Structures are given as C-alpha cells and as structure tokens.
Amino acid sequence: MLVIKKMTEEKLASLHDTAALEAILPKKPADCLAGGETVFVMLLDDKAVGALMMDGGSEGTSPAYVRVSYLAVLPELRRHGLGRMLMCTAAGEAVGRKVWFLGCGAQLTGAAAAFASAMHFRAGRYPDTLLLDLSDVEGMRHG
Image (cartoon, rainbow, N blue to C red; front, side):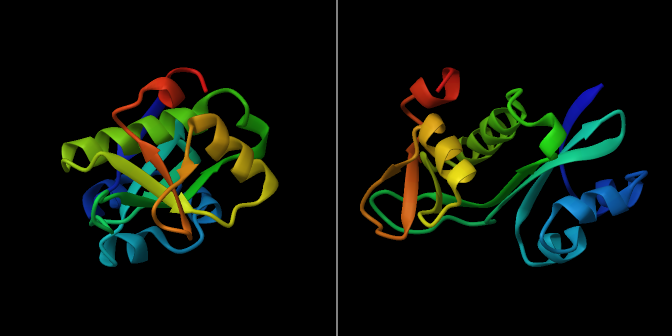
C-alpha cells in the first residue's frame, strides 16, 4: 500500500526501515525535523520510496511562499505521478499555513527543471526562486 506520512519524531521512531529513508534524503531525517523542516515520506509497503522536504516557515512578501528544498523518488518508480503526489501534499501543507505559493530553487538539473516546468513553477519576483501559484490548479491537475 502507498502512503504519504508527515514525519514527526514519533513517526520517525516507528519507521521499520530508516536506512531506506536516510538513503533518499540528503541529511538525516532527525536533523531535518530538529531544524524545523517539514518532511513528507512516501512509503510503499512500509519502505521509503520518496521524500519531500520543505521549510517550516514562509519566505518573501508579496508573494510569500514556502520553499520546497528537496524532492526525490526512487529512480525505478519515477514517471508514475509519485513526485506529483508529494508536491500535492506540499501544496496542501502550504495552503494549511495560509501561504498560496510554493517555491523552489531556480538552479535545477535537467530532470528537475522539466518536472518543475510540468508542475507550472515559473520565474517570478525572486531571481533565485521559481514559484508555483497554488490558486492556479492547472499544474496540479496534469501538467
């Protein structure tokens, strides 16, 4: 079964295979949580197959946005909408915080740039950041 969980210290301690999660994330999950980041983990049959990290607070003004600092899905599971599912979860988290934009770094690799473009992240007011307007559902539907 495919599940996305928002990590807390308690949920992290209850994971069966933290090594798989540590292999996906760029730093230890406990360090992410201690640093105030929000971490979503995608589990397939209790094994971590994807993760998304986003800042705990918002940046910028007019518009304010929440930065997605990291997104990964295991290579063998890519191109099946799993990254989009994680981004939709991040969008829900941002809207829950009453922030209507997601942001990501503008310097992306080829595959990441294509994904961001398909999600409708666009250059905006901040030159080092691409923004996704969460009031425009076009990118979240099908890209």
